Image (cartoon, rainbow, N blue to C red; front, side):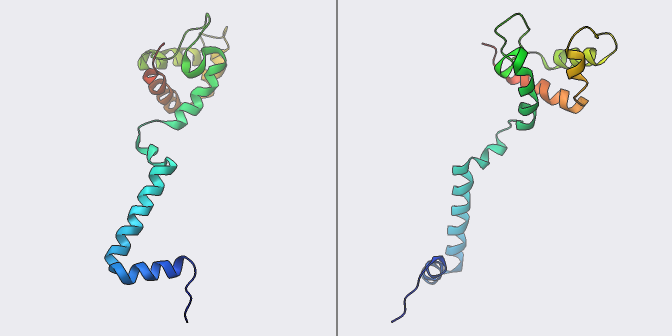
Length: 125
């Protein structure tokens, strides 16, 4: 009497029953299912998670996702070019009186552009 145990035995049984092409289709389907269930397919959603991480540093003053509840301007829904222009202004020598001149110098131009796109996509409530 022969006893088969484990995934290898199951794979051999399926391989014998379905053939190599059927086994490959099954494996491809399982891989697709795993990517879908774990949320890895969200990488194709267009969300810039790195920019979202950089923008998270703004929440202390500008509110969650850029939606301010106080006297500080909201960043959510702000025009992309306006955001970039303001950040570049704060990086210049003209804006030394605010905390923003320190924050803006901590980002590269690419990071500022990506944060601008992130905030523009946020819905202003």
